[in-house]
Length: 116
Image (tube, rainbow, N blue to C red; front, side, top):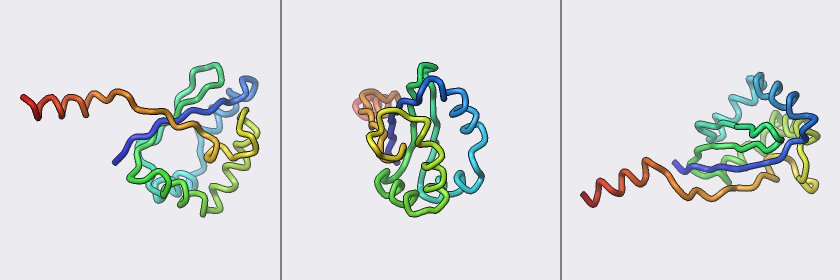
């Protein structure tokens, strides 16, 4: 399972509503994410509109394609799109910026134990 981290920017004036919507994601959307292979999915807010997402997946591209094929995702993305800035016509799930993982404690501990 690979780890992925991404960021997006929500309009500051819409951040409280964005947070509220994510406190009560539609059950069918939650089930679709799980079925599409999204694991340990979390979203964090810096409070200034920057949001950071974390997800684990065997294949993020395949998980994104699986979600894109669902009707519930189309509705969710359509409702969420107005919250974001800088998407250049993309939906939020198409417009996020993947961040490079530069450190993982478990990985480094495992490697160090192999050499001990």
